[in-house]
Amino acid sequence: MNWIKGFFLLIVAACVSAANTSARPNLIFVMADDLGYADLSCYGQEAFRTPNLDRLAREGVLIRHAFVSSPSCTPCRNSILTGQQFYRLDQGANLWSTLDIKHPNFMHILRDAGYEIGHWRKAWGPGDYTVGGYTTDFMAKRDDSKPFCFWFGTSDPHRGYELNSGRESGIDIDAVHVPEFYPNEDVIRSDIADYYFEVQRWDSDVAAAIKLLEDAGEIENTIVIMTGDHGMPFPRCKGNLYNWGARVPLAIRWGKRIPAGRALTDFISLTDVAPTLLTAAECQIPEVMTGKNLLPILTSSNNGRVDAAHDFIVIGRERHVPAQKMPSMAGYPSRSIRNDRWLLVLNLLPDRWPVGVPEGATHPMGVHADTDGGPTKSFLIAHKSDPAIRKYYDLSFAKRPAPPKWSGCECVTITVWTLRGASPACLSRSCSARQVPGPGKPGSTIAAPFASRIA
Ligand SMILES: [Ca+2]
Image 1 (spheres, rainbow, N blue to C red):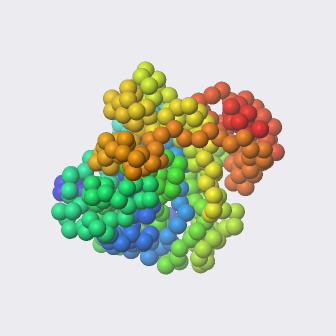
Image 2 (image 1 turned 90 degrees about the horizontal axis):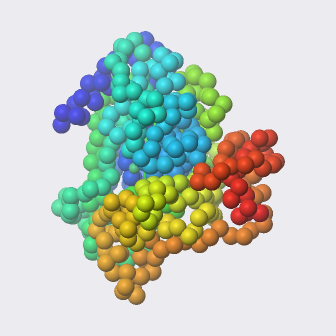
Image 3 (image 1 turned 90 degrees about the vertical axis):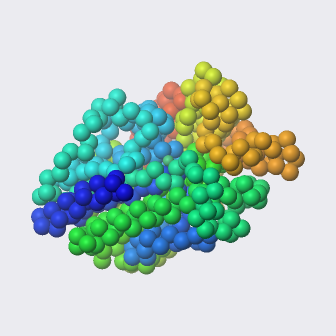
């Protein structure tokens, strides 16, 4: 395929040059689009194999508790590029937005430090990056004397799918794992198998890139990070703060620098990618970044939870698509904190529909527009009057509980920020923030409605 060849040529040029001129590592960030955390063999998937992604995990380290900042394409990618939680990025907290160039971006920091940077297929988006001050010459012509940082994006396994492509590729429909929040129906298993088909296609693309690095003799001096931007494009997954929405696969390989064959249970945010790569490239981490350098964890020889402080994660969302009643452009602000045992989700405006109104949304899809269209969504909606199906429909689409009136919650929240050393700017972008005393860090701010709800 020509587009694959084009990517290979770029990588070859970069690999050859880096081998000759720099001891600093090359960096490849391999990101799938809409890949659930459990859908690789190395995470226990048994209906199909992902040998190449498994190999990355086997030759490096597998992270079992990796989470996005926000389970939506643009805010997730913004948070990775900037090393900051999504809610600190102005309108960049939303899908179909922009990223203001005022926010330090690890790719640009690397460029300024002598790295050549580039990307292939879907890196940032969707949205209009030119409005934020970025230009279309992001893919500048390489200087062969520099190491490189390459964002290897794909559009797999994003919808749409070719109907029955999974079944016809040989996937056993009866072996498909149906999440507990769906009925075990043929049409749903087949839909999931079509998604599996694209996961396997992504696995093949990654294999080709890895082989290229090997052929160039650069694999040992390249940090390869493999992950996804949020869960699969199915109801109650993508766009949601639950496990199937915000948890992603994550494997990192760096030759002998990262002891191989390990699996970690530290809670890791993808906002940690930027400070980690900047440290490896001998660059300073901007103070504004809330992510943490993971190299001490990655280069340790331990398994399990290497750093006891990494025992929770913070996730949230604002607007995915404008899925509320027309002409509203509002989203569904919510925040969550989770650890090994618990997930606390705060639905800040529970009168709204969590994935969009049943009909008449601003978004042209109209019906529960935060969820991508497909056979599983169509089945649940078509059978919502059936008592046997209704509970599944409600789990995906019905309104959700209000935040608990829970004294003590504020302490938990502040402790979170203290442990992570972060400086929260605003926990709800949909409202005006005001200063409140924060025992963790002077000057911390949280949003007024959030503070009142947890008081
Ligand atoms: Ca995506």
